[in-house]
Amino acid sequence: MGVRNQIRFLLNDEEVRLKDLSPDLSLLDYLRLNKDLIGTKEGCNEGDCGACTVLVGKLVAGRLIYESVNACIRFVPSLDLCHIITIEHLKRNDVLHPIQQAMVEYHGSQCGFCTPGIIMSLYALLLKDPNANKYEIEKALQGNLCRCTGYAPIIKAALSLSKSGGLQNDILLKQREEIEQKLNNMFDGNRVEIISEKGEFFIPQDIADLVLLLEQSPNATILAGSSDIGLWVNVAHKDISPIIFIANLSELRNISQSTKGIEFGACVTYSEGFEMIAKHFPHLSEFWVQIGGNQIRNMGTLGGNIANGSPIGDLAPAFIALGAKLNLVNGKIERTILLEDFYIAYGKQDLQKGEFIKSIFIPFIKENEKHAIYKISKRKYEDISTVCAAFKLEIENKKITKAIFAFGGMAAKPSRAEETEKALEGKTFNEENIKKASLELPNDFAPIDDVRSSAQYRMLLAQNLLYKFFTEQKHEQ
Ligand SMILES: Cc1cc2nc3c(=O)[nH]c(=O)nc-3n(C[C@H](O)[C@H](O)[C@H](O)COP(=O)(O)OP(=O)(O)OC[C@H]3O[C@@H](n4cnc5c(N)ncnc54)[C@H](O)[C@@H]3O)c2cc1C
Ligand code: FES
Ligand code: FES
Image (tube, rainbow, N blue to C red; front, side, top):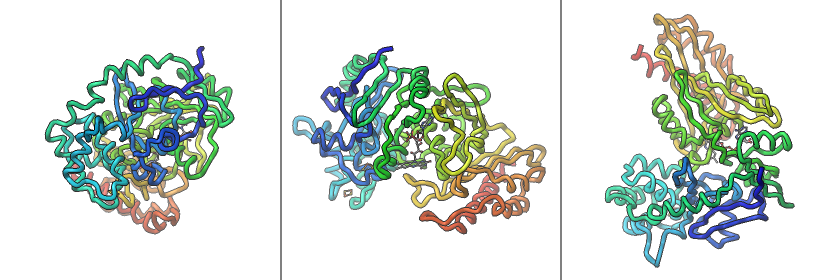
């Protein structure tokens, strides 16, 4: 097996090769402090405000795709074989880029601090969807905060471009083949090892190599999209070396479908998973775009969300209610467990040292099943749940034969409401029974008071969401 001791990527028009770098150096610090590319701004440094948005292009099945990401929580070594585009790349020969020009014409900027990030988010959108509509534009801007202009002029600027046919002459589209070729030339199929006194960063060449690395370093930090880990570094100042970066592994990025359901590789991002979710679980589409903002959905992986085990993570309740299973790998041992059994206690998951999540299997919903998920947060987008509730009922001959109700934000771990479920089994799906069952919720949960809400509010929410589920589903009986 070959080893490369160098990170290679393209930064705007430049080819970069780095050997000696800290494994947790953020892309934002690298751009501003090492490359003097200060158009990319630092706002929150926590992935929340979008001021640091840049584009990251990567080859997906041989085709170059650009996505918006938050540079503050993306580590430089994880950009191996990528093309990074910053705001400085847009204005060429002293001529503003069409998006910049539209922002000027529609008065889309006041103090200007958010503006580079907003332009980069719109750039990513219009490259992918030249005729994006208002909804798509709003979705692309979920992760960009502007405190002074307001969004109306910004949206008008974006709409003016999408209505006039987008960015046909854009340099990134014209140079696509050339850039693809450059990235292909950089690829050598080797493991990457960056080892210095600043720490260690590994990129395994394939799954077998990942297993090997984890056997050698079972305490290493497994890094996927870094949307949780970025905060461990920036906010908690945690030392996360040695790091094993897994999000480049194609075996962990597969999505496959069988007659029974869909298997998502652990490193499928929310954005990559959206199409399959929208096709097979259309009622989850709106919930899916309530996870983070667009940049977070481009970075965050399904496996990362599940492994992180936050009691207010959104995928756990959604997938537990659907009966999801995890495929875990530890050395030569591969095992499958129900997702609900993965969560043991606060911060404790059924994940051994050196073990990783390979894939997540989501069974299809059967005809006699009803399923819904509700996320309640202070802000609709780019916010963590106060309570997330997912309900699934199996109904035969008007009687409930099985109930699975899974909640986030109600306990120290994502949990099922077993007493409430029991109260409904064998009963008719009607208002009286639902109201009676909701009185069991205090027997299932004793939620906490915290900055997001009081315990009392959480309980009331949980009860009302069960009732909402009933009112939405009753007509479909
Ligand atoms: C601004 C912002 C908004 C957010 N909004 C939401 C939201 O609305 N809802 C929500 O649920 N979350 C949200 N998050 C949290 C985060 O984005 C998700 O949990 C995300 O899915 C984590 O995935 P990742 O790939 O980025 O994980 P990483 O940060 O790379 O890793 C997270 C954890 O998972 C482990 N890990 C990763 N992959 C594997 C694997 N395959 N096997 C074993 N362990 C693994 C890592 O070691 C680490 O412990 C938000 C985060 C930010 C910064
Ligand atoms: S600085 Fe706010 S998202 Fe990066
Ligand atoms: S223009 Fe000032 S924050 Fe957006």
